[in-house]
Length: 575
Ligand code: GLY
Image (cartoon, rainbow, N blue to C red; front, top):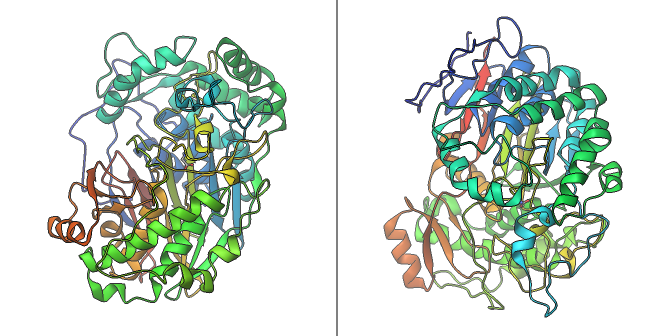
């Protein structure tokens, strides 16, 4: 291969499969070795590149572009591969958003967010005393919305060049023949073991006798069979027939409510992307049912009139301004945002100059603002979801964020079909004033209604510079997603950082309630002290997000960087 790749973090471990032979999974001369591979954190590629949560998935995406596919082909194949090699968040049983810009400037927004089943109802997670039973919205069969991912993949297909048959083959091979798992995956599967056993009704490939360790081979025969049904029958191979029957039987063995009709009637929807300008850059992001696009538009516009760059990176002055923008935007999320097909989200007003001006009118430098405390939420740190960024030689840009909600979703593996179901119902407001697993609050706008899509924070985003492709970016992280994307953009635009620093520098997060600033461990100690003296409660937390970014450099190369916080890895190629 003539790839030029800079490997800044390579695994020490070698992943070698017993006696099994290693073969190409994507065709002669383009072998990807699923038992021995390396995490590659960044590279500058002149033709095309992919950044995703797993090296094998990124390599599969690039292999499809080498084969003549475009960025949409790569996005489909990478997602399918992630469903196999990154079971914590890559998925068939979840949902997501794809944001694309074709080289001719056409924008594409595909919403394949999960939807509430027909038997769902507003109070389904309340006990007889009206208390929220979050154990039911967060794990097990009842926590799942109708999966949207497979419909999303097929809705993307018209923009791709290769056949679905070709695009799904690497995922089938990875599931059928197996791949070596990373140390991080081994430890993650081990720590979720009891939860898989509790929430699944049949044995699953994700649970093994004894402990997983780095280099073990994960073979998923049932998942391979499901992928083959999709290869043969298209989306009906998932939403009808054998796979649908297995999902419904799984539901009936637990307390689930997804029916054959729910599956058959699910459709992905085209959404108009949300567009706005920030300091001369055109920003394109996802509209409701994601809150992400509105949130980053609000936060960026709230700080735009201030010379943030001159305040200095993560000085108390710049961070305080950015926090106050976060506080105000997240308060609006709780009140005004939900599925636009069920609730009129005042998008134009929320991002209008007059409204933004009014929202920041009570901003006081050097003094902490206050969130009127209704009920403080608690944030758990498992904020899985996953993002992939792709750009091809022609200039097609694709950003996909997809999720099961938290790590491994509902922890329910569909017996006989081998894929995990989401626990996305928790992203609805199960009861006004009761925080979900991310501490997010909601009310009427995000109440449960059959067929409605739960509010998301996923923020796949594109930036154009003088109307030309500039950046593809996005991240997992629950409610921290919009703040991660916001900070990546500010780091690029206001602090002139390269893509690596823009995503890997320490981050902070404020989401209105709980009224506190969460910071990563390597956040500047002096700035932290100054924020505390202004009146902020500052708490340390684990990593925020796992961002994948592609930025076009002045020489036309695609600076592609995978987040340092996981096994995230880039792949790409030169002529
Ligand atoms: N489940 C995470 C999100 O959609 O925001």
